[in-house]
Length: 327
Ligand code: G7M
Image 1: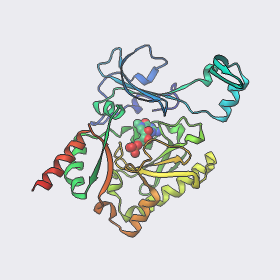
Image 2: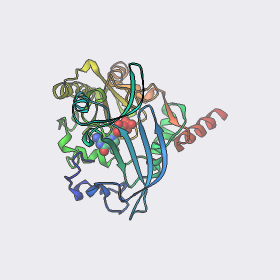
Image 3: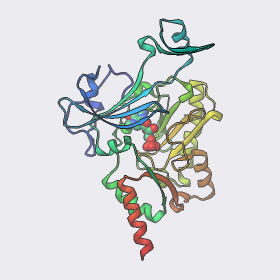
Image 4: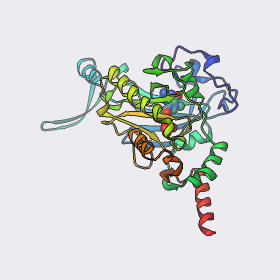
């Protein structure tokens, strides 16, 4: 996905691999300027606290649905200044003594909504964006081998977007730092979820150049140089570009991740980013420390995490666990 909607290299940017999500429909992102072709389907999830809404939509000329994720953008200082000092219309709701309540209508460019569109969206995308209850899973190394690895063979999100970034086919203008070393190198880019502006909600991803590392489960002490390099160079680049020091950054992995190509999240500690909870986030510094103490820690550890109750994996893990304890 490019931040520059007018600049595209269609052939290069589309997935060409067998595990592509590309169903043969035209790439709707190539020339998308409005929602004229979209029809509302249903609300998948609404979150009044984060001020987000996930919708399922149909798209004219396509048999595949789209997921449209709307998010009210965070305010920046500059935006606050402009709202006060340029033509914002106010409609009063009520006033009482020294207190007044209004709805403000800032100028169009101050009033943007962050929109993420996934098309064609797979059933797995729809499930990911849908409202759901979670359950806690204790994944032993045996369950990882018997259930999770098998599950990933059948059902894993396509990571073509990662390869597009690593091969400079997408988002190249957004790269904050790159170390091209095939063993210890990575690319640091703003996360899809970040508008790239509000430092309070700063969110970047380091994607490793090495192929074949799926998640923290694959990490051993052999990868310590890679992990230390990501930590040190990633923090340094963020401080240089955004002025946010390492002491204000949460640097972590997700387990489980959505995308099984090793990547590290860098978010502002001021920001309660989605997926920073116990049961999902693992500090990079803790992972490094665990591997320093026990070189094969992540092959031996039971990892505890939450999963949507409706996730087919939850069911497979439950059946495997029941099967083992019944024997
Ligand atoms: O849960 P997991 O660790 O797999 O998180 C993956 C992260 O990648 C999420 O924070 C997503 O917002 C981010 N992400 C997903 N996609 C499809 C893209 C993309 O196309 N570009 C960028 N920059 N980040 C993405």
